[in-house]
Length: 70
Length: 426
Image (cartoon, rainbow over all chains, first blue to last red; front, side, top):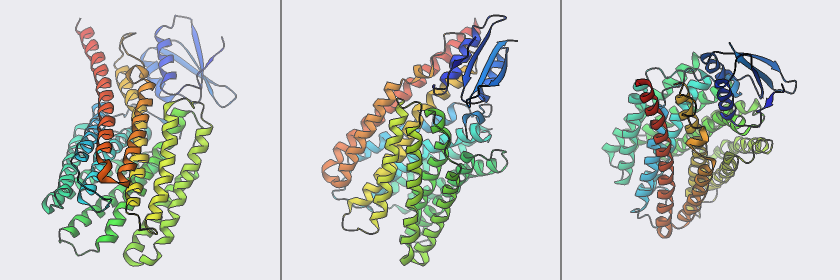
């Protein structure tokens, strides 16, 4: 699975895309996106939806956000 | 700072900033309404009607948008929570509107002393409450980023502006024996170069990199803000005690304006979203800052053309100030509406995207109307007697369109809220 790069989008479009995808997430499914920075405001919203998340550095200044069902 | 630091947990209720933003558009409508019967035939910066119109724009329109945005930014970017939002509405919003109305009426009806004194008291109370909320909150906040420090500097400048305004009113009504012109010039400088420019510097350090996807502003921009404050102090001291030396700090004040303009332009060129309406809007803000700054600097040297001070004020307040605040509103208001509704966990498909609240085409039309307004205003500054009708109509058009857009956002917001309430009761 290759992460989708959302770094060209202005806020809150990345947030809208990720929250929308989180609502449709299936069990055992993992989704990933490249973001320009650590998305602090998004994390409580993911937690409220029962979503687990983790991060990796993209290597070119961004972070990769992985989400899956808790 | 980057948006990674933003936290929406402390955000004030939607109605708090929305009240400031909504009433600002009503003040803009009033500006157009007052321009229609205005009978200033030639450019005169001290004409009572011009002072009234300037304060409608500075306090009614810009002051309200800046205060609403500041309360939001303080909470989200600096962790200064707007607890007891209704008290802030009572302590800031209401005296601000009443004070502005009395001040404008006081000027319009020929420096009515009672109205001006009551206005000064109410506005000082509102500004002290706002400054206390912001400065006390920032002193106790762990945030030490450029935006938070910049907002503290802007609030200090606002406080000095208000005290100088109070001194002016008391001097005008014969209660204080202070020299009028040094007070007046200091008041204008602290308002325009302190409160407005410093807040612009502070807010753009968060908003421009975030919405236009640019690299951050360099760290030395914060030192620029501090330098502005010191130069303003030097200007005021020179105005009161060494007027012959004023040229030096006043000329130096142009440097931070040029630095900010150059740096912002460099960032715009590196933006990953050059098609965003905000990009062109910010280009206009930069141009107006330079035009307004240079015109204001020329005012003290070239007094033969009475339209020049009016043009400097129009380009600074109306071009840079109103341009920046309208651009920010276009981004912030739909985002706030979306964010507050999102936190209510609406079912899938019910909540429109931020572009559903305000499409980019609407922001482009706001920019075009603002540009036409600025053009009409420039003609009005040149020949007020001839072009006041055109300026009034363009103001009414801009205000009506902005109010219509605000109403549209409010209707969409209420529709989602109502649908949520209906879903909860079934």
